[in-house]
Image (cartoon, rainbow, N blue to C red; front, top):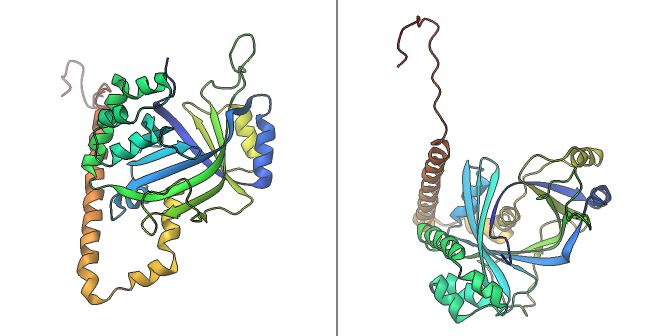
Length: 329
């Protein structure tokens, strides 16, 4: 039996809410969804990117296909604690996430160049079942995909640390049948993220320690939160009505993207942009690398689109001038 979910394919819609809107939405969920067993959790995500931050640059251009790599922990990471290395892809509005779970020490070794299976063997998880799953064939396959991602975009370096306080709501299950209410999809998940903050790792130590007192910079106002609805199908009518009642509207909000924009708008960055003429060539090289990364991603998007459409049957329609007995080319 799996100890954690390692593959996701779903639609994820975000809403930026005021304190009043968030409270109204929580009341609307009562009886249908409730906080999961973990309750309020500190979620920490370490995003990796190229030295030019080409991945987030491309993501902000809202392309047809985009992808990113991150290391995520729920709570402060410890050496033998469970963390996830995740590839998150988005194609035509659908999010595809594949991840492996391993110890924090193994993740650091793996991202530092040690083969995944060797890193897991050297720094295993305490839970025997989780340790076995981290090296199961399915996990090794996902690790191979992460290897290809890191090779394709090499070199990758720690770019941004994002932290938030999250409460995840999941369907309430009936005590007898073990099923959710009839009007609640079984895979519906709604999260509320508060206290969203970031640390620019290009201007800070690349590997933050759990005891670090370095402050993070806030991304939202104190009374704001980000609600995210995650589902594989359409939203139930009661949820749509609740969103309409509190005037909650979808928004494009990427935590990494917002943090990157905040870093780029900082005074220090603004002064650095005004470079002397002697440094123009270095800037041109950075722009060229970013353009190359965009071109590579466009090529991958095209290949993915062809792959997804390849299985669809082609339809041919005879022209209006075609007569009975004629052949349609």
